[in-house]
Length: 498
Image 1 (cartoon, one colour):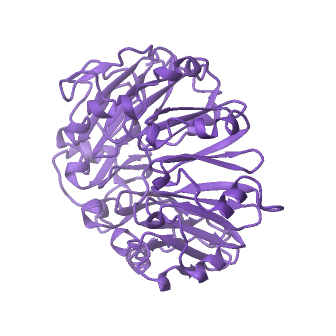
Image 2 (image 1 turned 180 degrees about the vertical axis):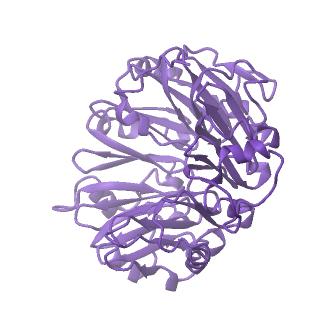
């Protein structure tokens, strides 16, 4: 297969937010190796969803990972899996999501082992003798399962079988080598595509599982596949897009579930990238023009702005649960989808026609940060689409004086948090989602010296310059005021978060 689509020069639009895989009720942070130190891994939040630090420390000790550097951490709805530089994994949190992970603590068995014994269910544990190991180098997740890509092009999976946690036995050999990518539909399906362009999907059949190139000829010559919550869109070597999965998530135009079809009513030629929103897809052509399909009221119907989308020059696409925002070169914003979710930005139109540098989405609203450090919000007030406190609104719009310029914005499902140049944090939106800070002690800690603000679906975490971590938001994440503040150790190096 010789792909005709050139991905070079696409820039930041290739980094647009996808249907993300973040844990709903817990956080994870890890640091890189520094000198002779292998780095560190920390978790916090709801213990049953992966926030139990003692559990993680014990797992690392038992499985010999205490001195191995973490390269990545991926979240499911209620668990985490850490990928280590030695190619092995550790998984913790809800047992439904982590079942079977121990088989891959050292990596995966080499492909020849799998193909010579494709019906074997023998453990891949660290106690097995004579095994040769294949490093796992990439991880993706559904709500309750994980799948990985190995260094030699094989696929592994673990977690809930109904959510893709088990590769079908008949495909284990064919997926043991030659795989170049793995993607997921959040509600429970994985797809792997190979260097010869063939495709295999497994897991939830209602979201496109159980299909392959052998059963459907349209699943061929595949260059890249993208998944949203319940469907997939694949870009073929000729730039054509094919879709499959739940039709209500943009998976197919056919009424026959599980079928594969070309996208209808749009020109799908010369497609270079696809942004996977919750129930829609946004195709990005090589000239950076956009085309959409999926559930009409959630952004699948972009007819009202089709002339703007076809003009090209877009640099990023952001979506929430019902609307989409695209940012053009020069910082002009184009919106469409459900008006209640922010598909109509007329309330801030004069402020978002130039110089917007980033847009962040909650479940039902958007916040745009411009080059002057001002923030403009629109959408459902219950999700942070309106800033009700006058003092906060004034600061967001440049009335706070020196140091009040906003440098970054984060969002939970129902609230926003803005970090200013002076290290203070401003919040607005639903109180249950972190839009209000009740504790006086926490408000004081958020008034200065904050360097990063993280968000999951239900809560925020602020990382201070002195190593303190401050958590606020939903009570399922932070059960008591005593759990709202803890500390990172000194000299831990560069830290990454999920």
